[in-house]
Length: 371
Figure 1: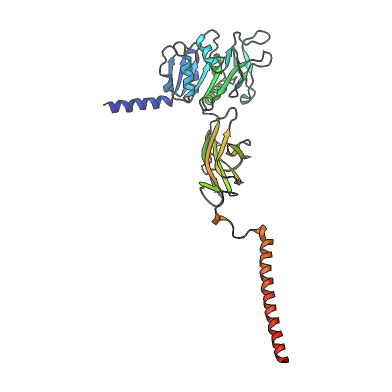
Figure 2: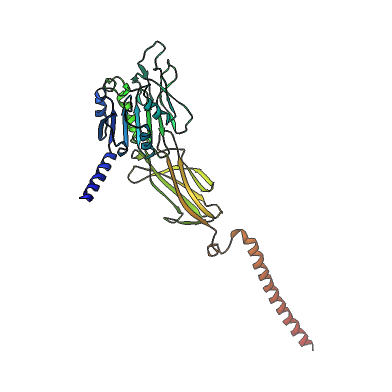
């Protein structure tokens, strides 16, 4: 019976991990958002929320954290979870503490145009001519963080302020902080003349790793003429291949680099797309190079960090050894002058010996005839 209970709890935990938890302090204004999202969703009021750690993806639509400890959400990110916070509150102390953990400072004044209008119209590249409408507070970065950046700023005609910002950890956990709550509201989601529905869907999909999720589907290295190689020798021709996909499509980029390192990089090169895998979902990048004449433990390193895309860090170890005595070529092309000198000396000695012996025989015969 106890064994069955353990299995049931593990199954429940796994099931919750695959779901999206929407935490709210009033869902009436956001009902249509649930219909837009292609997720298995659990909904919970902010005051009743428990077991946050059992969910991988959390969408917080609330102006308060209530009883949710801010550091529990921080731990959630450190454990590989994702979080989207939408709040226009400037007074909730718990939210301010949470924001500070991501170097975000919440501004006290709402964003308005110069004529005092609180409704902002913002054009974004993915929406074309349709604007994104919202009213919003703003926030700013309290310190420089290379892992965070601004996704949406207030439009021209207002002070330049951050409305939506993103942070992606080195573990590829993603957090988005939106200082606008009504961006997600029914009024804007249902309006076909604006782009809120598509913008919000893309924003949520990115936060929860459905967009720009780069994956390494295969990685290998080998000596030319072989399938796999555990050890290389000086000046071997090595081949490195890595297959990348993004959202189940081939990932194409021109700034992917390979390093062949032993403490310091001995080779650094830009990888170029080579061919698409048979299933059509991945692009294979290949690079061929001569192994340096330095023995030791080397690593093939891919370290790709581009804002908006999943970070890639892959390492493969290999050994480079000196050439064994039986692997050297029998004759070296650049030594032919020496070989020629040796063999010409031998040939000259043999010819001289033959001529010398024959000449002595003839002289002996002549001397015998005279006598």
